[in-house]
Length: 208
Image 1 (cartoon, one colour):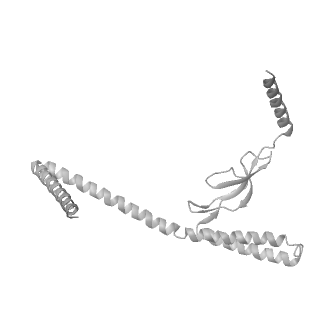
Image 2 (image 1 turned 90 degrees about the vertical axis):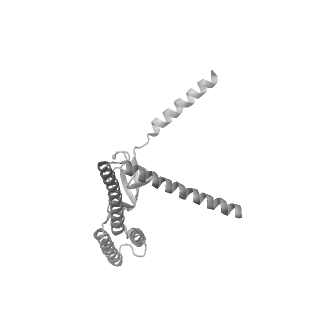
Image 3 (image 1 turned 45 degrees about the vertical axis):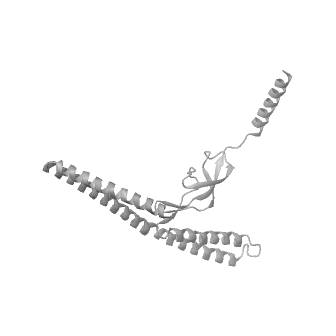
């Protein structure tokens, strides 16, 4: 233990000696400089210190702005679950056999639509908006493709169905839209011909 303490004390002493030596070297260097060079060196040090302070100020300003703009990000994300549940409730009620084609169903759907519009309006006032999806080109930054649907009338990779709404909070993605995208119809006759040719080529290669 005493050896370890002595080694620790020796290392501390060595660091202190090095620091003192560096200070002495700096002071000697400063003494050797003429007044004009000293002024330039001081100006350079001052400029570097000012630049560092300015960088810290900008960083703090950005952190403060982010906290103000996106402080409710987590809460907003949780709120989207209410909209999803409202959407599911509408679908379930519309598919209820006991309510189909009744006045009660119409009134319920009307009230649910009003609630949904109000919720989306509140989100919009807080800079949270829906991502446009249907008939848009698939954007990996905004959309998440869940399945492909054959559609020769649409360009491949076009969003043809929205499975779950996506939202942006200002310039930040709150959650991506879950979508279905189009693809060209597979020609069964062409596929069968290709398969037949490949089988013939395989049989020929075996014979050779």
